Length: 166
Image 1: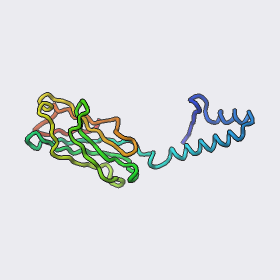
Image 2: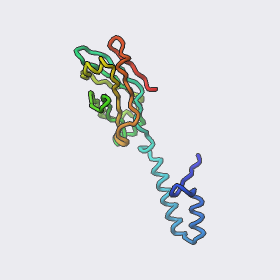
Image 3: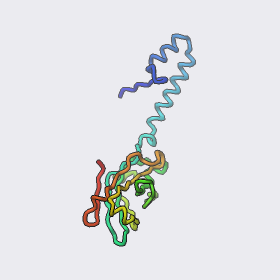
Image 4: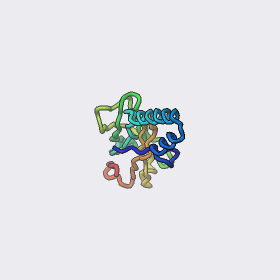
């Protein structure tokens, strides 16, 4: 693995350190090396290696009387109680939360995993006009994922919509 560090986005680390050495700033070099080593060790901390939550799939099923169940499959590199996927939610295009599923514990050895939420009220107008809803996922360290999974309600067939991530 090759590691290239830039100081102020301009000079590679080695050139920077050489210039300090040439100027007789050995103490600064020692401090700079120690700082860089600290940053490198922090960057390889297990809790920082886990990325945001990936939403792999969803299965929306009509339960009757305008209520729906939703199964959502997530993948996340959970590392323990301080960093795990802890929630997903279903929102409309304006961000209104239609359903919210709290995940109460890490899934370190269970990846990917699927969790359900029942009795979600989806307005009939959304179904009738073919709105797009979005599933968002959250983890304790990174917050809400930047890649929601879109559910195009025009694709409902026989009361069911199955969607996989692209």
